[in-house]
Length: 83
Image (cartoon, rainbow, N blue to C red; front, side):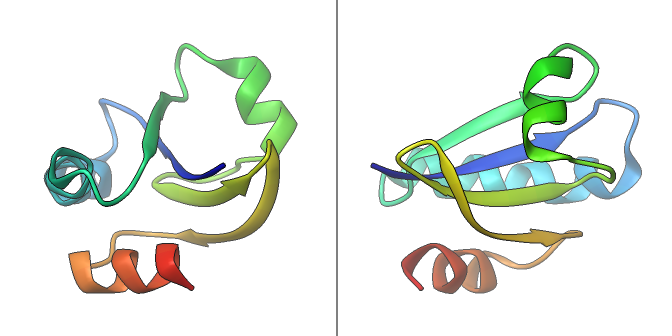
């Protein structure tokens, strides 16, 4: 299974601007997404070695395939997901 894991924090400025983009993509249903708040899920942050937010990781069958850091536009995220 392929999905995007979106790592963010409530206090993160870039996350506040990027969050609506990710929410829109998730609501469209073409991208399966898991949102991870770094303030509450330390075990996941450690597993994926997330050091900055926003971070988006493409995960297939529980393993990282690719990642990017920073806010991007919806078209970039779609292309990243569809590879």
